[in-house]
Image (cartoon, rainbow, N blue to C red; front, side):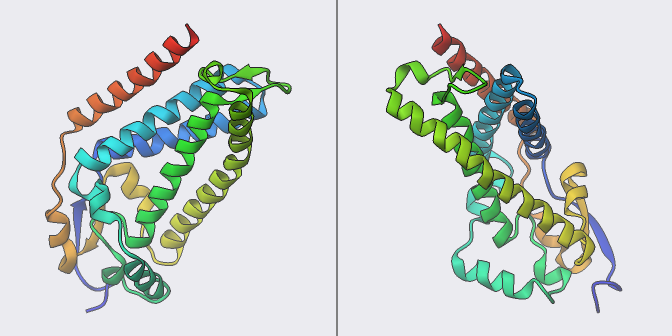
Length: 233
């Protein structure tokens, strides 16, 4: 039976906290880019602090969140990643669908988290002495060489983020247009339709409490706010 003729079943896929994280990060990155273009440094800084809080949340949620968003559930070895990529052009939905991130997508998550973490952390120590005239909240605690290095990283790493985001968007479009899989919709609603023959795997997902997720996110936000406030004196 082909994927087109097999009965479909609607299954839960993504919990609310991870969906909130995803779209909040999209907004924070877009705001960071826009505020930089418009030379609105205060908004740029707030966007950066938001990114840092979101990254802290995602790291914690990667250990205590729902079973399919934990790092241990989707970090695959090179063999599985290569095998998945080989199946990608002609593989069926059954071949390519996982109750979480696929082997390649899982590593893209890690790359994006690492890049935005580097961007947010480097911004804390960067000293911008050009037209922005802005010092990160922790720049007073490091030497000028470190601040200069962090400034270089902050200005260089953003290009890697743009490249990773573009690849992420292109992958989502590829799945939507070529493989007929609406991964974007699943990240909005938290559910997706899958062939009935593989739906059992989705039933094994253990969903964590959304209240716990929101509480962790709030704590991360307060921690970043407290750190910046104390650093600014």
